[in-house]
Length: 285
Image 1 (spheres, helix red, strand yellow):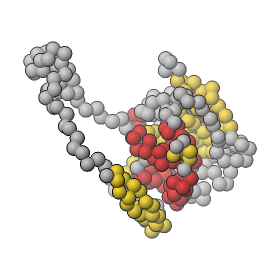
Image 2: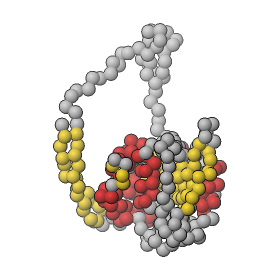
Image 3: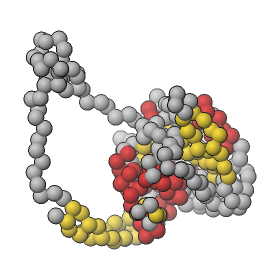
Image 4: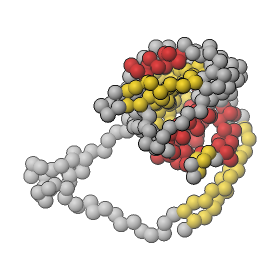
């Protein structure tokens, strides 16, 4: 059964004041059938004997079922690719380019033995914003790293176009590993950030709103960009842009988390809600 609902967003600005109201229509479908529950008494042991004392019980608990795995935190997810020497050196090199008149980009990839490579490197148009990059079907990337150069309208953190870039990779299945992929940016404001995928299903859902039949959907993109630009803009302070970006990620629930690093890309902080309900950076231990 499918039905259409009217969805209304009332935007709240970072300072708590009321923002604009947006309305759109969404078609939802659900099955009227009844799913068949799994047979919880199924024995997974090849011997057919799942008694507690048979000595062959597979999995972690009684009955042969493994213990549930604890999802990785954003701080844990940057330990691989995010804190790899290749990644740190690429980010440091990008910092030397922030006084250029164009953006710079690395697309990191892994070979068959898991070695990271940084030989896919490019630049955007002179005095322009953003970087257009193409990739072939089957290409898989472990990181997308880029710079924001010294121009009055450049942001001190990720732009909305950066979200479109990661959606592009997700939509076309070009992300190597959802648990270790990072998107990084360094800026002329002296800041450096990474985003990791906290929930790939939510990111894929968001990407499917940005790209329909392989084409960027400007109507949906413009709607979300208006939300974003209410909280993150060039005239804003670094701190307010950080909070605004973290608030956008949380309020829109698109499956990404934000981290902030030091100049050497060694120590990172995750943006999360503190005990007072405020969004603030917390050190990764």
